[in-house]
Every structure is written in structure tokens, then in C-alpha cells.
Amino acid sequence: MASFRSRLLIRHTTTHCFRRKSQGDLPNAVMTDTLTPKKRSWTMSRIRSKNTKPEVLVRSILHRLGFRFRLNGKGFPGNPDIVLRKYKTVIFVNGCFWHRHENCRKSTLPKTNTEFWQNKLDRNVSRDKLNLVNIAASGWNAVVVWECELKDKEKLAERLKLEIKHEC
Image 1 (spheres, rainbow, N blue to C red):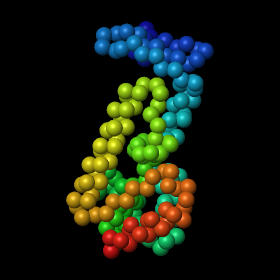
Image 2 (image 1 turned 135 degrees about the vertical axis):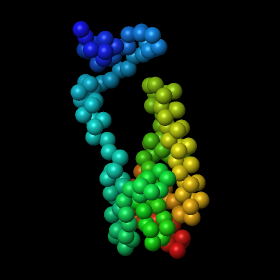
Image 3 (image 1 turned 90 degrees about the vertical axis):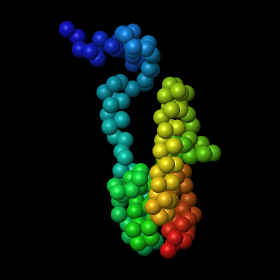
Image 4 (image 1 turned 120 degrees about the horizontal axis):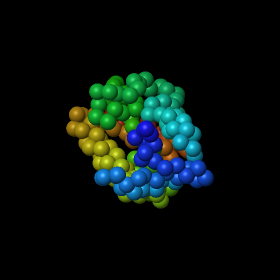
């Protein structure tokens, strides 16, 4: 007897296209993918939530400026990437795509499955706003660093210095 997954998916070997069989409440949907399922799984497993390149770069800039910090503040709303307790400041290093940076070329909506992506990314934005409000209500300063800001490291360093020291 075939497994549940194999009954749901019919694999078209040429384009790695999967079609769901209509079973009860499962809708018919076509998902095209240029990668094999094994390669897609491997690719998705490499996406990290901590110690990303943008986050490491921001930490390097902060360290060069003489700031000492803690990583991944678990006691704060939204688990900020960097916590500077001495300055009562938390820093979020956000990807422009995932957190919908306004007027940024990296903040595009995928052309396939747009309804899913719109809902997912809207939830991310609303959760981010709520986290920033909660952090401010607790008397802490929240700084958001966007992925696209990392191109100009000197400008980012100046901004971080001003925003962190401003709260002292």
C-alpha cells in the first residue's frame, strides 16, 4: 500500500511539478519547482534564523564601535537579535523580503501563490509592529537594521552610534 504522501502527489519527472489529487477538503493545486524535492529540502535546511551574514556584520560593526552586547534576547518581545543592556537598546536585523521593507527593491511579492505570501508577510509585519510597541512600552529603545542598509557600512555605523547613545 502506498504511503499517504505518495497517494497525494503525482510526480511529473520533467519539470518536478506536483499535483495534489482531490481528496475531501484538499484543493487541486499545481506547484512547479525547478529543483528536485531532495535538492529543495537541502536548500531550505540551510536557511538560518540565527548567525546570519547580515546579523554577523552588524555585530562586527558594533564590536568595532566598542559596544558590548548579548545575542538573541529571549526575554524580549520578538526575540531581538542583539541586546545592549547598558544602553537599554535592542536591535533587530531584518531581511527586506521577510519583513517587507517599504520602498526596497528586495521587498517584492512572489508571482506564484501570491495570496499565501501576502498573508504570511502581512502577519510578519503586524507581529513586528506589535513587538516594537511592546519593547517601547517596557522603556527600551528598539533599532531596526534592514538588510539593504548593510551596503554602506560607514553610514550604518554612524546611525547605530547615534541611535544607541541617544538613549543614554
